[in-house]
Image (cartoon, rainbow, N blue to C red; front, side):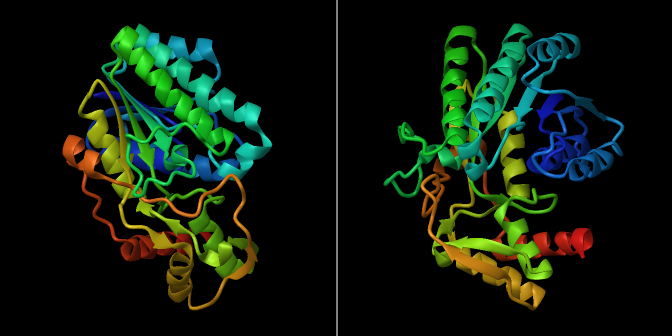
Length: 316
């Protein structure tokens, strides 16, 4: 297949693009290399991807509607994996207008490109943040998700809903995959696993919300990208599907795993949970199992070890 991967220079996007290139797909990456975190890390991902002759990168912004529509018209993609987004729960509270522009309006531009050029399947990277402070545990896709706690989640949920409209009106196959606390090699430096590793190795002071008494459904990046590939290969009309491990782990325990591997402690300051965040995330993966034959296989212990081994090569 010929597949467009947006956000291809980022954490999950680069891992996904490499997986698709390795299996022989023609992959076009799309990224604007913004400075939300050090662009050099994204350039390093691009270098890694450029080793594959069936991969090429387009440097552009999904907010540039004319550019997006011309790309779709020229390339005639079979499928889209849309991972480009401004992420970060706390950053979204500071810059709500930017998150709506990128995560919602940018997504609409891509959906228009897809519908106008008969793209067979559109897979959208959504987030467990759309569940907000739900009382339905584990999180299940039938939850209304109508009380998002910050603009990032609101924009992602709005894009999911627009996806249904585009399916209903234009017949676009649209699958929203809701990611749960992804971590692993090539991770973003603003993500918790990376921050903890930096705190341990470089003495950087970071907040530990609720003293680490917060549960997260930590999901290794390989399991996430496996789920996205399964969704790309199986047009389903319109679906929303959780991609998580289904095994919540205390933040405190996750931190202690990294400390044990490093042989030293991190520099943490206890802080209360912010209003934009939740105490726990927990993925019900029944639907993913049934529709995609999705079975995450990397334990948190193995995943943390793999992340730590990668981190040491990059940062130490």
